[in-house]
Amino acid sequence: MPTLCDLQQAFSDSIFDGTHAAVTAAMAADGSAQRSIALYRRLIRNNFVQVLSITYPVLHRLVGEGHFRVLARGYLTHAPSTSGDLFLYGRHFPAWLQQLDAPPLTRELARLEWACHEVHQAADSSPLSPDQLQAMATADPSRITLQFHQAVRFLSLSLPVHRVWQALQADASPDLSIDLPLPDEQTGLIVARSGGAVQVIPLAWGEYRLLEALSRGANVGSIEQMAPEAEVGFHFTRLMATLLSVQAIGEICVKEWE
Amino acid sequence: MSRPHPAPIPAQAGIGLRSHHFREILDSPPPVAWMETHPENYFGQGGAPLRILERIRTQYPLSFHGVGLSLGSTDPLDHAHLHKLKALIDRFEPAFVSEHLSWCSVGGRFFNDLLPLPYTEESLDHVCARIDEVQTVLKRSLLVENITRYLTWRESPLPEGVFMAEMVKRTGCGIALDLNNVYVNAVNFGLDPLVFLDAIPAEAVQEIHLAGFERFGRWLIDTHGRTVYPEVWSLYAWAIHHFGPRPTLIEWDTNLPALPLLVAQAAQADAVLGGCHADAV
Image 1 (cartoon, each protein chain N blue to C red):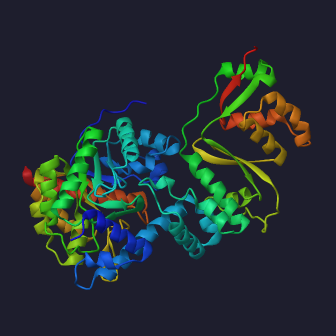
Image 2: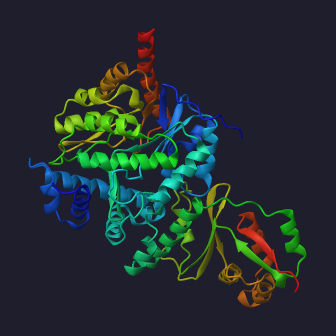
Image 3: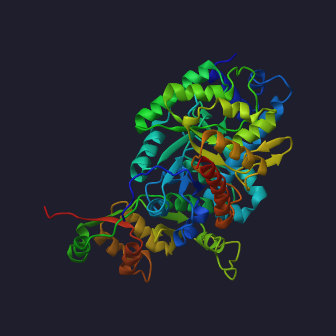
């Protein structure tokens, strides 16, 4: 009789690696062992396919059930679950699609959906206090830096996949159509929450570059100076209004005069 | 928002709370006595799920039904998972916290499925030590649920009911008795469900679960994806008369129905419970 640990390892080897001898030897010798293993393999794989389809619903709709199942099974082999918390399952899926050299639309959409998944359950943010907003309005911009909240992501993508993401939402209007293939177009997105729902906000590429600089710690003054180079028509106030509307800014830091 | 203190869940029917029904439940709270939920669905740090659960908790007692602790695994207990569970319990004060008599990981690899243990002395010692550890961290007793199995271990000398009764005796845990699982195992392996139920100490049964199964080849599979079968309702009526009225959960996790059907299943369970109350009078 194998130990409990050996028996569990043998079961795992059978399900994931197809090595059946040890586990079937530990199962009743009534001819049912192979059928049981086949059933468990099917149930376990189906569970993971379902979990991944919940995390990547738009990609699921885009590529269809059959192709999604193939991807999900391949991913399970590449990156088995390592937690009892299924919220974490699928976090390496975009990187794996990149390794696979999957079509850019597929892998960029996966990056967007994982960001949405993380933002959906990230810690709640609170509005900035009147004092902080006042500081923003009155302090020397070169002394102001911003800290962004956990419930916001900035994404740089090689395609405007947010158009596909919007068109394939479960509640999207049937009148909303998109032309494929998408143009090769560097795209910046803010993924944030508003009223409990995840929002995806496209930015002009120049705006995105400025936002990225802010998120790396650049001060507001330097951003204002960079702006004219970044994009014609860039409007710093408009960008700040967008950030404030989705409570993207966690803190406004004003450096004291030395 | 005020919230009632944790109160015992009454011996009435409750339903599983699933995100598919959030809006409808918030708009028009259904006439059920309590709600069950998988705590792992609320392990995030914020966002709509937690806010919605807060609102629902103001109107219904909750029961947490975990699926990820892997009580029977020989891997070390995942304390990060356990502490997330503890934080959620402290926040929402569920009346019951349950897990499964199963394992779902080995060597750091998770199946995220409920896998059966061999019912041996080694398994019993192991599971009891794990339940003790969990109960110590949570500072409360756990309910442990019997699962379905689709295999038979060659060396499994203890009958399942005897194994669970001994587990209760050693750890002081309670039992979430899943009658659909009892029925599915009985049909799949030609067992008498009453032999299992007779071995279960009545006072340990604190929650009863009902669900639907589906046929797949020679197997009945516990899918939680349809209405409770008549055979399971019959077993439920027997169990309620045997154990006495108990809080009863209608579990439905796949192919989720319209809320009224779920509520109607709960009403059917309440009718059985009501009949038992009437008999007692």
